[in-house]
Length: 347
Image (tube, rainbow, N blue to C red; front, top):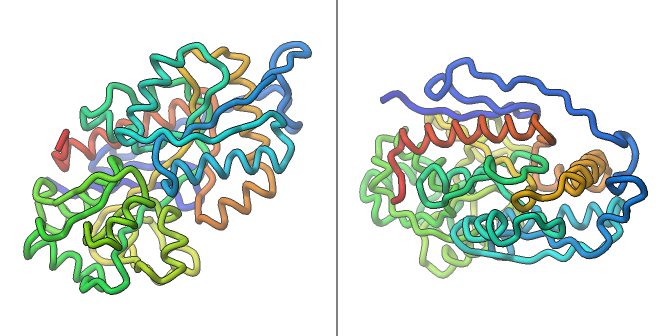
């Protein structure tokens, strides 16, 4: 079977799949006209006061995860820019790599307007693997926000010092290379292993809900390497406690991580990036959906959000409405093909 490559435009304007998955596929351009465009988000309806009370922003993982980082960055920017004045408490709802809370949003929170949550490619991978009934494409999708590159890291004192060392260790005995990975992280690593001539089925994955837990596992000796979005490891990378081995970016990262090799430059034809976005409960009132689409649009154009993107090396990918839905459904098709090719299934 030929190799699988999943890529995205480095500028964050579109997502591409390789010829192995869908040759020549390109997302159609959809123009979405938002009421109040160019102004601060306005309450829906004629003189309505939504949101009149707190709206909870849920991160379906532990603190330190990419979802948690995203949720807190959103609330900070929305309130710093005075786009939303009502309280926006962040709650962590770990479980099932996002599946537990997504199921609650689809079933227990149905029809509510006081809940939004962060989601990403992780949940699409969980659905594609048969581990969750729902994926982002099934929810009340409000917006996609950005795209982030995956990175493989290891403790600073590890005997694995390079991507070549990692491949050698996997080939020697994949069971000895314990890989800390959330549900979505298994896919890029599985694709990488396959490209390196190692069966993805032999990889010793251990599931953790996010970068915080993964880092702890590595530093405690419970995992040899870990893979997640780069921002989940950023503070620990800067402290020097862990070191990067390889990224699945389609181009070198910006400084200070510009020396980290990409898989492609290392001879392994795999690129994969993780989009993240915001969704609401099933049957969320349209007025609330419109409000949050407008508020997040205002946020995406703000100075504080642009600073956040730059700090975390997130590439902007803001979309709402049908445009966002099409983007996410296209990503789901890509993920399904990748899961099928690596045969990781419900493993």
